[in-house]
Image 1 (cartoon, rainbow, N blue to C red):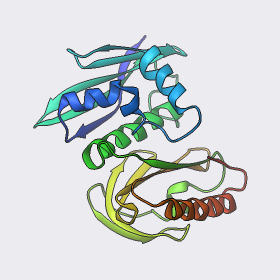
Image 2 (cartoon, one colour; image 1 turned 60 degrees about the vertical axis):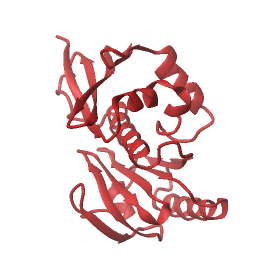
Image 3 (cartoon, helix red, strand yellow; image 1 turned 90 degrees about the vertical axis):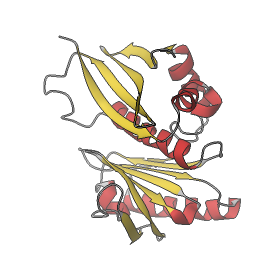
Image 4 (cartoon, rainbow, N blue to C red; image 1 turned 30 degrees about the vertical axis):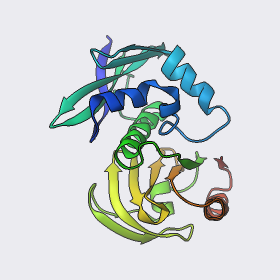
Length: 235
């Protein structure tokens, strides 16, 4: 029997109309959704334009169905902030909702945190991203050096495995992933996730670095990642 399950909820310190625009205008979606790739604009159009039905009055964006499930965004307001709910509709798997690692679910959690990060700290700014992924090897949260950073909202300071000494606030925790702010990257964001079968992902969202600084950061992380996850794919 089909039912609804809330995937994630994120509270954003921005007016509802600003959040709605960020979810509906492709140029705005590009500032927070996913990561830089040759296919990003095509994916945005497929998911948010051609594959979605929107009702601004109700604050609902309904995405198309695949494999018996469909997802939707629901916007509401709470204490002067906008709350984005991501809801999945469909028949629960035999083992139940949320038991295994679901790439789409984890993606929505990450992307909603990127949306919040963009609107609260860098609205209108141009981002750069680095994305790394492996389906084997050690868990990424520990491998990067972020185990034990504390609860969401707390301060942290670490030297990460790729060699960066960073500090900032813990942005979010969920079952499989962690996000931390990085003051040293003009206010950047790292989201790392552990896959249940081994390995994981790392997504770096960065603003304000020069081309040389960004190039050095990319080279440092790519060199470390390829050594830590020799069978991985990173773009």
